[in-house]
Length: 484
Ligand SMILES: [Zn+2]
Image 1 (spheres, protein in one colour):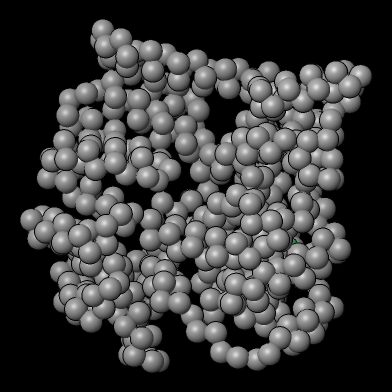
Image 2 (cartoon, rainbow, N blue to C red; image 1 turned 45 degrees about the vertical axis):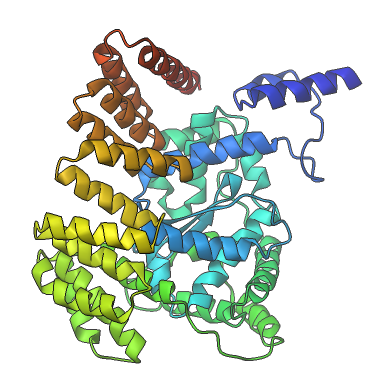
């Protein structure tokens, strides 16, 4: 018996495949306790794989922000909070979804998403931090475990689709009937059980995280109230966040009571929070015109810093309205006033690109990268400028260095594909387009691109074997999905 258990655990650890689980479940093999004390059926490795598949799946359903400045910000605030949790070893990945709806959610493997609508509804950085801390607490307190385990009985791609449907709550209708049918077929309860106890615990633990990471605990009840009030306007739906994390009057008063125990003081917002909010307001506006109207209306209001942030928003809105020429003097002034902020030089270089002043844009990127080496936004925009001016060799070299230091995103794969295409290497180009599709949950399109890569690879032995190997992996995944 003991040997069986060991064997089962070795099998799971070595294969690390969720596909193994249906067989184990049918044969009623007793699984050993691996991982935490709750006796989870899912190993950390399996949860990580499920998290990655879940994240890839989300890309095909939601507009996940590819903006490096937005990503850097949400990562930095998220990791700061996570470091103050009681399980700092847990891995977290934070990302922004470009959606006006007020929502945030936590998936397997510590993937935490927050909608731009929620960030824009917050009126202080601590309010945004309070929602992130609440989601982090759901992860560290293992509240989603039952849902993940239920998903673990399905194949990896189906499980990822099912979780995407479940965790996004109200949006599940749009997330694919197949995923929900799979969930029902496996007789899963496909609404997450956010019990009152779980919510209270996530609030309590979340508030500890907040105060330990130097954010305002009082922001939590304040933001809950604000979200609830946003529903009182005629015709507005209940924010999705409140559907999946119901906020009651007693919950707000409990949280308020606990927050009052912390001494009152001021918590100033970070510069990056304000800058990213201005940027998201332009990126998620209903149309470019309304973003321009908004920033014209608030122009000149508030403190000197708030005025400068509004000027930045106005400049971005001008660029979005194909008026980059008018944005340039505003950004030049901001850049001179804040030489230590990369956002302004980055936006100015974008305006130069938009007006086809390529040498000036490239010069700005090169100077800025000396000052901010390894800045992700500047590096990728510099690569774009190089590709626009057909300097593919230099662009490819930069991208290769970049990929060694940062996990590649679908967008980085696309830039790589562009560089290879300009260099006349079609096989590599198709291979990178395939990776971009795969990273955004579009497996069949990825397979098609790999087949095209194979056709054009010629007699390059190394490239052929790389393509062949990858094709095999993706076809196996597709087969697994079909079986389900
Ligand atoms: Zn919750």
